[in-house]
Length: 370
Image (tube, rainbow, N blue to C red):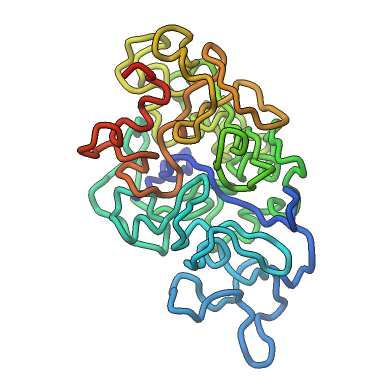
């Protein structure tokens, strides 16, 4: 799950979704970062003869010692992938979600640790956590006629999910410009016309970021609200991903503004109308951006279950524990996590378990009669 393909006209990264890039938030409020600038920035990366990089001298080589672009005290993983026991840490009053940690409870998008402990198939391999697995020549579901070259996944930029995906991580200091300082205070990202007001800084994606437990999906009453559509995007052409860009034609973002549409920018065969075999049953691939049916087994899914989350066709202002067949939709994140999980193909449950109940744990949330 870790080979990145750069298309000549797309400048896309191989990534599933995600969710997940996160911002710093002060105290318990879900808002743009506040507090002292020195919590995150350093002018010269030097104080008392020591470097000011937040993390770097603990045997984790990817964290580095700086200096870093935009005068920050760490790069993406240096701040969000410290590898400690906690899934959220605090520096100077700012809470920082951890996408790489050793604790038992992962955040909503998962944990890159599973790649290092269990193998490449457990997540999207980002530089420099691990190397390409060498088994893929293109993203699964890739359906693009343009020439591609292999590049490994980064957190953001040309080869990543977050930020401006026409910029090169490590060379462009404004790849995440305006994000951590301008995220909507309410957590509601229902415009997504710029990076800072896009869900989890996935450009052009709408959604509601959990204002209660911040970056977690913890219960029917505390979870993210994902944005979905009643119909998937059609088989893609260049401008289906690039036309939405307000000012730069290389801004890659889904015209549908859904989380599944975002995954579709790399895994298009899995998520387009043509790829799933139409807009009604029977499908040839499991559908996403499709309304949960009201008949039969599907009618039983009425209480939100974080094992198999649904999407909403309108971005809500608050979290709901109710699921409405005929209105709410299946998304990619109904079955998968974005960063990493203990299970193959970044699934939310052990699909290959020899125990019937475990193997079908997430399936039967929607397919209640199976």
